[in-house]
Length: 281
Image (cartoon, rainbow, N blue to C red):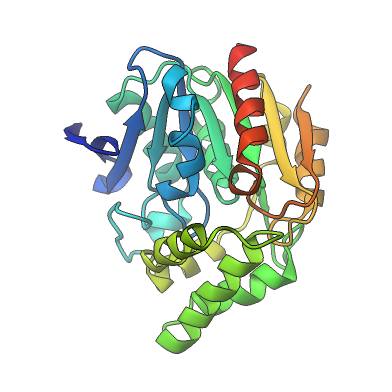
């Protein structure tokens, strides 16, 4: 079930996700081209992919970006069960695929998007997946944390605070920890606003999940590209190495002088490598 309107920045869809949560979805490019479904990270929104949907990729492929539940312009219920149950995340992806009739999309997941893709694979399998691109992605969430940087943990805990002053400092901390070098001012401002759209309680609900998708990764039978910044202090490079060692025939692409956001810090290379993955299908 979805409602669509035309928008100057592409087509805007409202998709009914799991548990009745409304999901904000946008798309660009030829309707019948190979679809690529972009899934952003913790406390971000679809704008994390602006270097992709505002690139030549949209001339050749069907680019679809969604706001995860609780994020961006999607609905934001404050029931923890809506975020701590893997079936909700998995079924949100399935709902977008069905509503937009996406046939074997390439799934691109940044940061927390790695968990969401893994939720989908664990529940629905890879039958309707063309390929997977893990981008600075996480697939293990444990206590104590494993493969997650202390700099991110400190900022994330602050950003999940109900005290506005603490929360704002936490958001600033996370945004500036994301990249190795400073982004253009407009990109930094965009990231600050995007993170501000996510309620602190939702940030906390996501941090509370305990997950390990290693077994799921071992059964992934689709082409897999892992894009990882060498200087990532949010999701550490050791997480990418773990994914690469468990996904059969995965390709690990390391980015020098790059932090947690290869798609923003090195967009030309990232887009070229993504296009090569798509063409390999």
